[in-house]
Each structure stands twice: as structure tokens, then as C-alpha cells.
Image 1 (tube, rainbow over the protein chains, first blue to last red):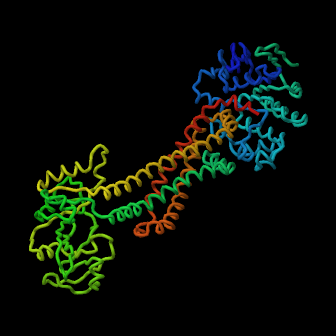
Image 2 (cartoon, chains in turn red, green):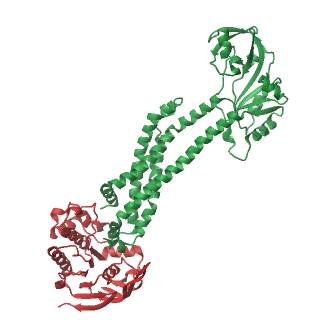
Image 3 (tube, each protein chain N blue to C red):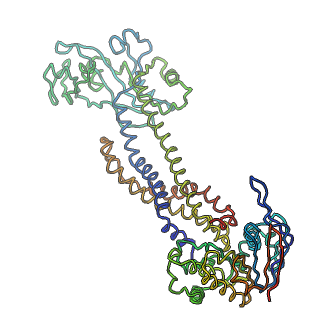
Length: 223
Length: 383
């Protein structure tokens, strides 16, 4: 499903190079729920963005759904992302001037995936956001915002969900709810890769990958 | 969600940025529309004012003794009246408003007066203009201020000049010059009175400075060359003070416009560009998430350029309304003589609707390039 072959990513700064990923090789199977852990600056987010076609590695290859995604043109990679990948970020990144249903429908403008407004409404109902549909993001609680972000990510039924600290700004109750939604998506056959410090996700994970200083220190299967 | 709806919603969300950008384009369009709406009136008023200064060229017989000429104010020699038609038929002539005159000091009713015959103005082919001097009917005269005062003459009075009756068509106001002791009549009447048929002693003309655009060309040299080719028996005197006043006035207007146009364009472009840059900066994470959702560079660019075009179109329409309003309100007070020429010019609206969106899009170009090239991987990690 996703294969990283000796992927390195170096950030060049005025104070010297930072090797965020150092020859990382990783294979994630279709339908797998993978948790990525590590201390701050260990390269977790860089890994996630590289898998998502958002950050070109300095060296190495990222193969997703059989395609070398950085071998594609920028335009093709954008379409690939639209059709195959859903992102969830710690800071939600909702568009402030669109209401909730419009935010969820934002991916409608790109890619081939077909979905209707009715699909979006159904999804929002499932995520308990029906009464918030016409609210602007600033009128929502953090948990509601993250549920909206999840709705936006899963609406087009992508093959992979990449979540970067999705519970980082949430209380334990909301964190558990968000993780349960990701788990539900996983149960329906989706591949989920979550970068997190939280423990709530452990019970759903098939595997946990530990990153340290750009290396995979340990990869442990869950029972 | 269409791109147009996204643009509209963003405009509604960030009203201040939009309104400030709109203000810049409205100011620019208002300025240009009011300027061009009053432009023709301003141009014509300047021409009218300049024309009132008088002729700046005197063409006199070549053998004129200049000492005597300056003492008496006219040439004692004459040249054929046909010279004025010869001159007018010269194709590349840089003169206009050619007026044949014949003047001579005579004693009339115990006073020394300057009897001045003036022919109707003629212009070279293709340069026909409304007359800038007197156009006197035969059998009528215009009488100078001093003469009218001292003899108690007024408009409509009948007078006799050397046995020939004339009607005073106009008693002139005070000029503070020799003109106050002149009697102006039609050239042919004066030729008859002085028994100098078909003779003139001066052609007054206006040198068309607009023809001499080359700064390296001395206009007087050019005039003399043209005259030598056309009328070898005549010479030309350029009245420098009048010529320079005309040229200065014309150059001043051109320089003013030449400065103000690029200045307004540069300021408005910078103003809109800076606001667009601020808008891009504010929307970095929004652009980042759109990238993550699969929006390509073209779609992102469309959101910004589309906004620029919207600002341009609305600004053009508002600027036309304000500019025309300003011109109609204040134009007639400034250009009193040519006030009736100030009317709404719909073609300026078409120009504004075409140019203003393009101008805004150009101002948005660099910010848009920044928006489409910024790395979403970085912006999405910013807190």
C-alpha cells in the first residue's frame, strides 16, 4: 500500500542542515492502522507529509498505491492526493469563511471522486454535527472542529488517512471520540496513519512505529 | 463549491482588505475619468487662453528697415496680397491663422490714427481652425478705445473715413497699447482708402509649436527655411515672449500629466500589491490545506486573480460614477469658458472596465506567484 525506500529529508537552514528523516524504510499494508510515535523533532510530521505527497524527500522513494508519487508531475500528484489521501491536522485548518458543510464539501472541486451534498449531510449526522452544519468554524468547539476536519478527510473515501496529532488540542473525551471515528474508518477498510503522543489510539493500532532523530528505532505489532 | 463562490465568500470574510484594495482602484479610476472627462474642455480652454495672447509671428517684406519698423510698428514697404495664399498652400507649413494686414499711420479728424486693414484668416489645407483674431465685415470698422473716448463714438455710429461711410461695429475696450488708436477695417476697404489695391505690409500668423517636437530643432530656423522656400521676398519675426508663453503653457500641461499618470499608476499598483501580499500571508494555511486537498496551482491562482478582477470591475464602475460626478460638479467651475464640453463619456467606462481588471490582475501577480509557490508542508505546520 505505502512503501518508503531509504527516504531521507534534509532541511537546509542558515545554521546548518537538519536531517529530519535519515534513510527510513517502511512498509504499510492496505487496511493497516499505524501509529507513529517519537519525541518532538524526531521526524514524525515530515514522514507523514512525505507519504502524503506534500514534502519531496531529499532522497529515496515513496511508493503509494503502486505509484512513485514523487515521480509524478506536480499536477498529477495533486490529483493523486485528491483521490487517494485524506489529511487531518492538529490545528484543524478549516477555512474560516466557509460554514461547516461547505468546509466538508471543499474537496468536491478536485479529483474524480464523486460525492453529493446529501453524502456530506449524512456524514455530518454520523459525526453529530447536523445542528452545526451552517455554523462558521469560529462558532465551534475544538472537538467539533476536529470532527469537521475528519468529515472533510473521509467524505471522498480516500484509501489513506494521514492524521498529524489529531488529538493534540483536545480534551480526553473529545480525543477518544476522534480516535473512535478514525478507528471506524479503519474498520471500513481504510488505511490510517496517525502521528500522536496520546495513548487513546493504542487500542486501535495494528502497529506502532517509533521514530528518533530521523530513524525508525522500533516497530511493534499490537495484539 | 464553485471558485466564484469561494472568491465571494473570502471577500465577505476579509472586508477591510477588499475595501482598501477597492479604494485604491476607485481613486485611480476616479482620477482618470474626471481628468479625461474635463480633458477636452481643459485643452480647449488652454487653447482659447493662449489664442487670446495673440499672434506670435510677423511676416513682413524682406527689404523692411527694421529700425524704422520697430519705431513705427509696421513696414513701410509692401508685398502682394497673393503672398498669403501662396503661404497657405505650402503643404508642410508649421503656421496657422494666417492674416493679411495693411496698416499705415494717417490723419483722421485732426488725429494721428493707425488705419489697419485685416483680411479674413486663412489656414493651410487640413489645418482649418476657428478664427483667433477679428473678422471684420466690409463697410464696418472696429474703433480703438482712445479714439472712441475722445471722439465720443460708440457701437452703431456712422463715421466717414476719407469720404467713405462706415458703421462702427465695435468700440473696443482699453488695450493699453497702440491698438487704442487704431481703426480696424476689412483689408479691401483699407486698400481702397489708401489706394494700395492688392497690397499688404504684414502677414500675422501663429506658429504651431506642436509641429516642432524635436528639441534639437530651432523653431525659428525651421520657420525661416519654410518661408525662404515659399516667399523669398519676405522675412519672419518671431515674437519670443508670446511664443515662449505658449510653449511653456503647453509643456507645463504635458509635463504635469506625464508626471501624474505614472505616479498614480505606481502608487495604486504598490498599494494593491501590498494588500494582496498581506492577503496571501493571512491565507497561507488556507492555501496549504487546499493544496493538501489536491487543489493545483491553477485553481489557487484563479482564487487570487479572480479576486483581483472582481476588484477591478467594481472599482471601474464606481470610479466611473465618481469621476464623472466630480467632473460634472467641479469641471464647469474650473473651465468656465468651455463648461458645455464637459459631459459624461461612456467610452471611458468601457476603457475602465477593460483596463482596471487587467491592472489589478497585474498588481496581484507577484502575490499570486508567492501563493502558488509557497510550500504547504511548512505553512501547515505553523501555529
